[in-house]
Length: 159
Figure 1 (cartoon, rainbow, N blue to C red):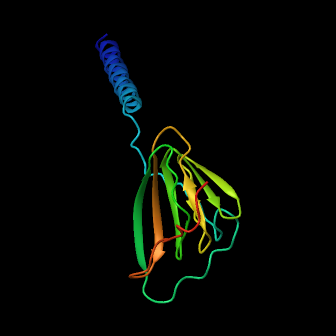
Figure 2 (tube, rainbow, N blue to C red):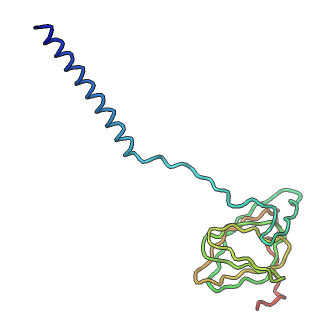
Figure 3 (cartoon, rainbow, N blue to C red):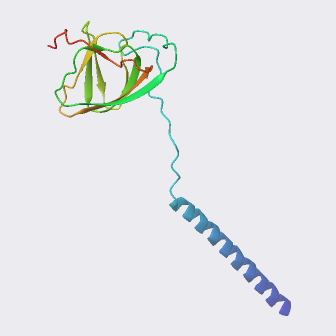
């Protein structure tokens, strides 16, 4: 009779321990589901091109020591920027609003919020904010020390 009680007691202890272990594993799994995943760094290539927005091939890099320049432009609603050209390559990202770029030949490109743009090099153009909110544009120039980023053409009237 003592052997039967010992076996029952041993079986009860084993079953109890198994139940505790299963419960602990279930709790761990439940807690693991409650913990939000750790955010990861994300990378999205916005543009890779060797052409400006009008389809013209970009020129070769300048010779000599480079100077990289970053500029933030804010175009008020309804504002037109005068005719100009860029003697150096540049590209950027429009972070707010909508910008229309118009070449002297009449070719136009509308750049929307969040879109990248590669500007024309040595081609006369101008920009217009035809929207109802300010345009914010970040541009990056591949220049050289003391080089102009833009050359204005006030002799060409805006319509």
